[in-house]
Image 1 (tube, rainbow, N blue to C red):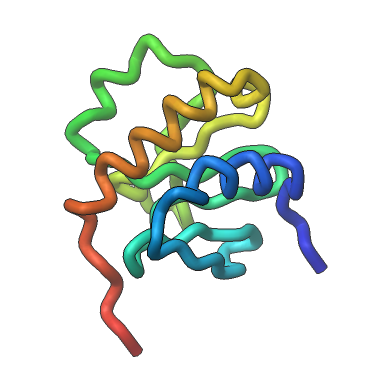
Image 2 (cartoon, one colour):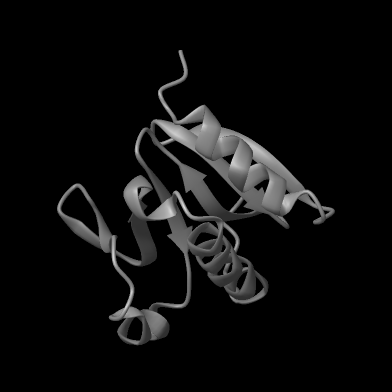
Length: 113
């Protein structure tokens, strides 16, 4: 059963169509877009998860609708959640997708099991 926002998923997928190495993986209760084998963007029920350079968070204080992700009480460095409310405009979605794609070449890949 899918519990992620399918309309938002399609909008994100459209922005990744030009990239050669993109795969989708269901995890964390949503759909994760893996770019070059690394977690990049995820879509959940009412937000997107963006993986970005943790050093850039202070530069995002002017942007609305995002917060640093916390899983199991642990602050997830380099991962933020952006509310669907601010993603209705294409330029806002483009901004966040661009941040994730810009960091992807520098992100570490998970160890293969």
